[in-house]
Image (cartoon, rainbow, N blue to C red):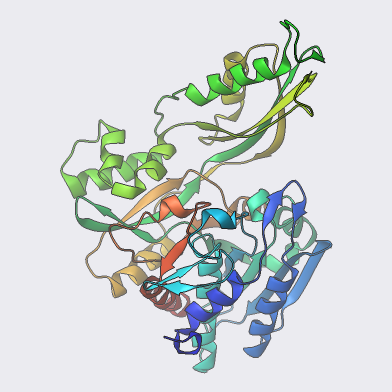
Length: 431
């Protein structure tokens, strides 16, 4: 099948993947401007009037409002992010920015996180407007910069400097929810109703500089290595919330297994196991090390980055425990700290999302879950907007979809993209 013969949702996702928007973090990014301009041009072709906000050069956000049939209803924010994490091309089977179609799948950085959903949003709105119709209520379509850096140079600035974009909006939908998992050979959908809190910390170890040949007891690298290993080996205890209890109940009903062993229930979900198990507890993963500048020089300072995700409301307790784990000689610096959220699995929007999935995949249960990572819904919550994860995808049972978030050979089935676009279009038409 040639590119021109592909479904439009696939072609739009492919176009976006081919725009390299790698975000290395800490303000080091290629920028989202070209991707935002692509999105803006697409929105203009539908008769909409996009607005741009670029608070930092090349870190571009774009928004358009779609008028609904009943503008007395609160507006719904439908949002995505345009940046992606970097990809090391030599580790991939394909060029990560070529948007290649192979084996019935679209490959490339962003195919899962989250240029797939960006394409679903655009083409769902296009289907409605090209048919001469309107969505049920006003839609605020927003495509953010810098989500992969916690939204520091993206959504955090947008909600502060452009709150008028979100006038009369009370709810939002975005990524990492609405996708299927297979539990003991039975399909179910996960609907994201909460997110763990995000804390990115830096460990700093200091010692005495010296010659690499010396007997040296005050080595910053050794101190750091011990601290990193201590954090990496810590097994945090299970601590359930209302959402994870509901998740376990749903998995128990599918499998017949008791709810008293959360990890065993998560294991029944196959490739999604690690994603779900992380929602039951704190996670603290070392992700980067920096020390030294020459082979025979013992450095005075060594640093490590740790990605910490905690259950909402436990942030201070976890930071105190991390300090105990690494010891008093290690300084913990907080680089980014963002809130956690949890919303009941109920209400008109939840019902509408469940019903939209049910129209396209009848009889398949929908289960709430708590996302172990974070989205731009955190920033929107500061405006009183309740966010959910709903990027609907019906996936093959053997595809490790959750493992491809920030992974190698990221890819999504073409038929899953088409399914998701149909489900999302149905939701926007009726809710």
